[in-house]
Image (cartoon, rainbow, N blue to C red; front, side):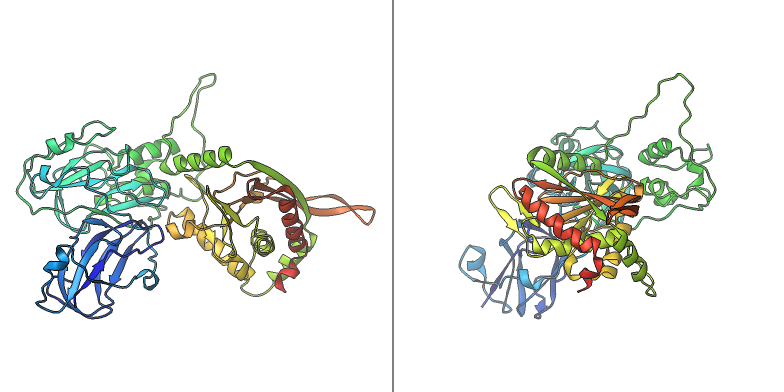
Length: 542
């Protein structure tokens, strides 16, 4: 009996999926466990395997096409079986749910842009409209950092079309198949909302002016492709995961044209000017040695080179304007929403750090072991949260969620702003494990290698500015969490012990709470438990 295979729900937030590639064709024999297709979700590209055996009789969604979860994807049955009733809407057995059978992918891959805005009947044959993809779960608009192809260029499968800056990272956007780039709808440095026109790909020489004019964009009209030799049509390009940027320290001279021009993208040139970087000192990592945004961001001057501020003549007003990055816009939106929607209040405490300092010194005396004060704070918070689930809660419009697991977000400063990678199940990890996890996540954050999964799911957040010499500060809650702890530096100061003034070491902390979920007494009790762990860290080893 034929089996109807529907579009699976491959993530908890997935509502539709795009077939990136079919690995089987109609008529092929299918064995249980064979990979049928690669499907793009809102979080990743995942392999979709068959849980049945038979012959692939029908493919309902072609490569590059998108459909809702539980809509017809394919039909598997006996060779030669009549499936006309199924195609006409007749009843059929459906394949078992695959949610619990699929593995979560690690590389962030965007969902395929929709083509619903332009009816297929209006498009010239073989022409594909490429819209701004959604490259992260919170992305609302993207900025073209660099085009690696120009209008009229042939595009081969796997080639990078452009680098797109999102609210979380700069990601490469690659083509899965071949064609000609006919139209660019967004210039370098310009931004557009998700699903707005980005480019048009199709057979060389095709007139796409009518297609382009049907889209409303916020940028100046782009150039159209010159007439060229015919090339086979190109299905819609698909965004690829961010790749590791190459360091640009100790560079070889960058390519320079005969007229003295340096091969550099406009955005990279502007960034270099803002930072006072000499472009001739940078080795470009783009196509043909072109300098792109990542080269500027990862440039490290030769040792001993002094950095100086911009020279401004005495008595002259001067300023620079820098466009807000997608990350900066996302931070502004999230924190503004949190500050003005959650009723914040703050509880401040000062802990004695003498025992913690001795504990850390003794712990780090173990070979190949190194923990920081921040690791001690994270571990202490995790254990205290298990005893105070109200502080480990999350506020939603229709409910409050009291989490029984502890995922602690650790705020990390990066050049474009701030990210909050998450240490999962922190209460179950040892101090060295927490230290290793935090160092790895912080390194990924600075190199823009964090995956969406590593930045979501926190139930509580720790922000530490102690390493910058800050004594005390308050933070804005990372919604939908109910609280965030701000950690200052350890200060040597006179303290009173046993009626005597002696030299001591203390650390100030401030807990920001959402009054909708955490009352003052609840927050105070949490800090009392936290005090016990931090002032006597040996109790965390029990």
